[in-house]
Image 1: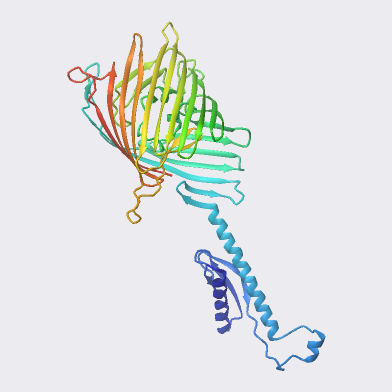
Image 2 (image 1 turned 60 degrees about the vertical axis):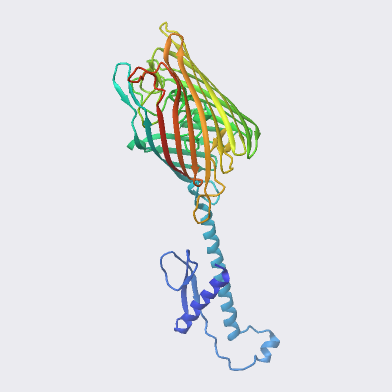
Length: 499
């Protein structure tokens, strides 16, 4: 509202008070509607007390000549007019001050695609509330199998709340950050990220429960992945280089990133271990081309982990187990290493290469694991990989920042009234994992995944996935005729909101 309108409203209130015989009044401004009131109420802030001065009758039609010649102080009507003018100026000043405070408060509280955000005027303190809801449905066909001992096994069909997370993040004194991410999926409470950060020096330092720096696919948020499930390569990564409690030091620029960290185990309680296992991870990325619609990304990562004195590698269980579930809901595992014990140490190497060219993107990763064993057992060598390609049918490019790719943001949000259809994306992936090493045969598999993603707006996405086994060896599953589970098809759907 313009100040002139506020002044007129104030003048009307003062005039009404004078006509009713009241010569002094308290005025209030409604902080929402910006209207002036003569009595207190909800959302009304006091402006001040204003007095209307009656004009005194003058005995002479013209000022005394002596007063004009001797510059005597003016009285009567002119004095009243000057006082009224001063009061109006005071009113305008108070209204301007309130307007400024309202505008400033609007800057400090914001609700947009990034969630609910608060910050102080000096930006020393910030707080943000975010979250995500992933609701999945899965259906499998040709999924009637038997285990090696003859037990019937079938994939589970149905719906689930895959992820239901609340995120709290903030800043103290500009340089100190924190992040807490709590997951309520499966009707239980689990802690994901929970750490504090300091970014006031040469590098950023994180301390707490966080992702270890290994693999682009594992580093990227589930909100941004093109597929509902991570690739077969993640069979080797997830049990060892997912979130853990530790110290991470990172540094980045527009074209490169570097991280190194020292970690213990995950946040899960481990009360039956001699000491605790530990590991160290590092990841470096370089983007020789990094433009809005053109990106070339290269990366390399390494990990080393040593088990506890009683054999635990990552949590309360001894040893480590690698297996692939066709989706989070199915409880069907076409390959399964079983629990591997007698671990001396594990070394891992990861390689990354990806790119963006306008609406097209492509990339892949490779992981190799060397598992040292004690008590005279042979060491093992496993590997996993994937290659993916995508095309945004509506022309948008995927986003890239600090060594990670982010989901598409539609140019025009879906809207019947405005004619927008959001963004549509087609993606395909081929992936493999090999856990056969000489006489050690625990499974080798390749699969194909296709995805159709509809980005309704920056926050809402619908995903349709199809997954099929291409090749499999030494699977724990067999068909009724003793064959391999080649004909297994998995159909998946997700509704997602993230902010």
